[in-house]
Length: 251
Ligand code: ATP
Image (cartoon, rainbow, N blue to C red; front, side, top):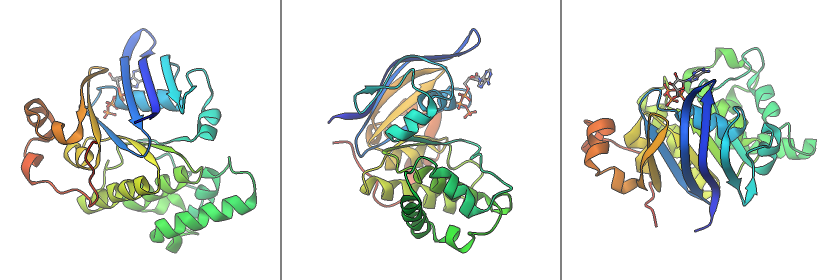
């Protein structure tokens, strides 16, 4: 299968301290790839570098076009988007205005209106809270708004950094179910997640990141049975956890 995103030998450092070391990974078109790993493994750094928020060396090919020297806006225009770990909403703006800002790349008002309609259908809760300030939303609603805002640019690749952070288990399941739904509409996802069990259940492929490197890369269903992964990342979830419907297997 053709890779939508093809990353080769990506290196990122903070000053002289390397945080991502020669990482290579692929996200095939229409697939979910999950990256799991402990705190400080380099997962957020990896996503931020792919988005162009941090300088990096190596190669980031998206639909066959090299992105490594392109600015963030050009990457967004190509179809890449990131929902950052802290969600980074504009707290003093309404739900509606946050969404509109996510569509800044769209060509005209008609396209913005169209995408807003899709966002409100996908997240009915946001529709109910259109005029509410983002700062006053619950954690789950903030995550929905962050995802809705990212989707306004009609991405082909959604990168999600720890979407489950601080959320109740039921909301985590709902959030990941949306990722699965998006896959059905052709949107691929690169998912960074501490909840390794849920992340691997919905993914076709999984990567384990340790100390800035991808240490294991395999079909997600194989990682769910891998002794090293069970021991380090799955623990008691190895047998009993639940994930949203639509979990897919690698082909
Ligand atoms: P977490 O799940 O805790 O966010 P992570 O896997 O996303 O962890 P990163 O946040 O990417 O890991 O951090 C990777 C390494 O880079 C860590 O050692 C971290 O301390 C370091 N680091 C992250 N951000 C900075 C920064 N702005 N300046 C210096 N070092 C940083």
